[in-house]
Amino acid sequence: MTKICPKCNGEMNMDCYIQDSAKSISNLVLIEKDNNLKKKTHLVKAALCKTCGYIELYAELEEEKESL
Image 1 (spheres, rainbow, N blue to C red):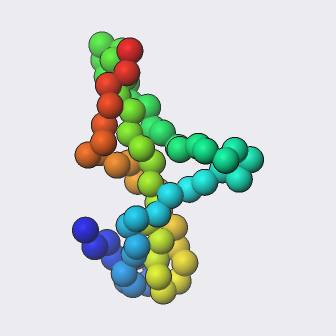
Image 2 (cartoon, one colour; image 1 turned 180 degrees about the vertical axis):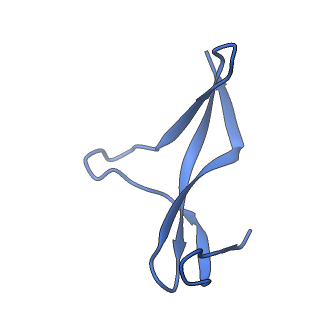
């Protein structure tokens, strides 16, 4: 999937992650609750513009997991 940078219209690399340097293994996760208080978790990924360096976070919806 190709995404265009909203700042400079350059091509963005969609296969990036944000790493917390304080922990050696950590993934950012978005937790989404519905009206029945069921939770879904989504892996948070990053897109990087190869031209200007703009960074955008997005949820990886293909890997959703249901939590209790």
